[in-house]
Image (cartoon, rainbow, N blue to C red; front, side, top):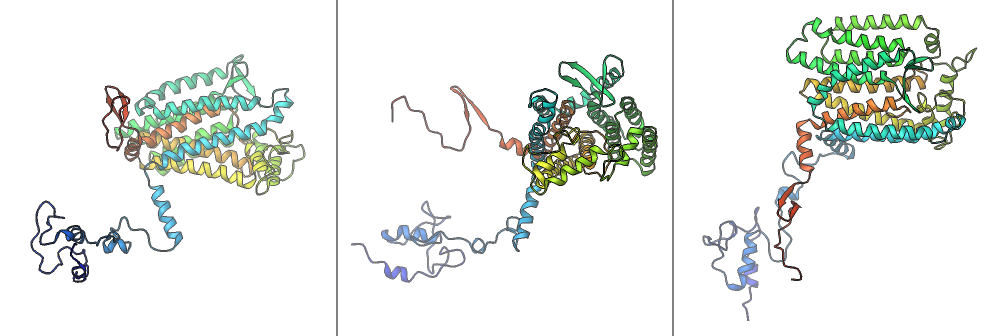
Length: 502
């Protein structure tokens, strides 16, 4: 029978800070192949071999694994230690670490843009079905056209996200030339067509038409960003003449062609893009103020000389229709928002879209959203635009490439200013400018360049070095074999056996 080792267990000393190893009194020097950390089991009877080996590792047979005191107390290095305090502080730290991840801007841009486009499709169908039936068209007529535009725009967004930056810069000048040519063709009788008093359209045949002024926003962003980036590389932006010429004359040429068609809303957005590019380029206050003063003077003259534009300013904050119904659209937009309540009347249950609210599926689609989805729906749309704007600002602020900074800043200025003008008009805080809500309102000419611009932001977010490394780690790794391509994984490779062998 094996010897009783109870006495040996009773004489075992209490574990020290690092277990039993090195604290056995009178233990001989241990070395050899059976050692743990350089010690060999010697001087022990055969029954005690395994027990003594476990004792050297700091635990007795059958006991739980030994943990260092720092691990038991929840300590460790300061970087990995969880934040102390209550729940709000811990939640704040977790959110902060999430916002600081390399791919946060990438996912915010992609997710918010797609959600805005999908929700816009739903609201376009709901807001346009009655208008389509009034025109003796199928109820889903405008929805199908918008869906086709979003699909094509999605392809453009994917193309822009995959294109290298050099190709984007190379396309800036051809895009500007083509846009200027199309905007000039709009003013040719028989080619250009007028819609709602603005001659800004070219019919392509059938139900399709094109508004070249929407592509002027994208052309100005790319051309202006490339121009300023090349001048910054040559250190010419410190001189005011290089800062203004030819950027400001080129922008004024686009503004003149747009104002020939009477589109004041698009002209305001292009002016905002121009100011955004100048601000990003570090224009001095006097120069910036001078250009702004000239733009305000021109805008005031254009508004003062047009009864239609002047009447729109008189409807800001209006609560009645006016003596001749000039504030009909503004007031009924407020009615739609007010009747929505917290959660709306239900999808498709809008009352104002039954002929009371003009342009319910284009310029005033935000009012129908408020009526059917309530305050919760409108705040969700605002949150998506805020996420898109934050991500774009983050991309522009963290890059070292001047072209990326100017282009990302120009795109975000364009989308955010257009959203503010549209939503402000619906809320009665700004005059009605006749611009659609980006990615949300009906209109293929507005959706296509906007989705291409979102693809630009995605490409810029992917160009960040930390984001590149994170994306590379998530892509599958292939290893070529004679029998084909296999996934490289952490599994142990097993030799193939012939068929039927087990």
